[in-house]
Image (cartoon, rainbow, N blue to C red; front, side):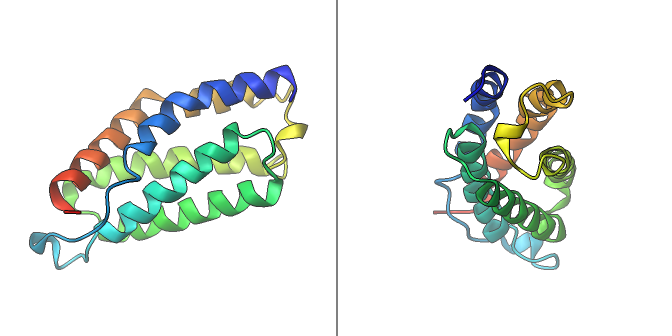
Length: 152
């Protein structure tokens, strides 16, 4: 792995570690949000796919197809979550959706092939998105919501 890509991989760890907090939480629902549907299954799916996405971005043997599929799954999960999320986490879902969407757009420019990204002018933006404080706070809010509202 080239140096720029390795640095990108190392920097992804903090946001992806925060996302890993969501993974072990299983989904159930809360009765007060029945009108919008149950956000817990979408939270669970999103958490699982975000952890997979993080692993792929930091992986040394990630294929372009694996990375593209992971982005697709995370984007689908976030769209479902947007449809079912209660007001108290709607802003956080929007923040994460924008962050993942922009990352997806940037990686798509290189056909999701990490090996072609050395020296890419977008690397700085990608690094910033991966360690974005607002996104990290949003992930924490979703983790808290899920812990409090989606019993194991």
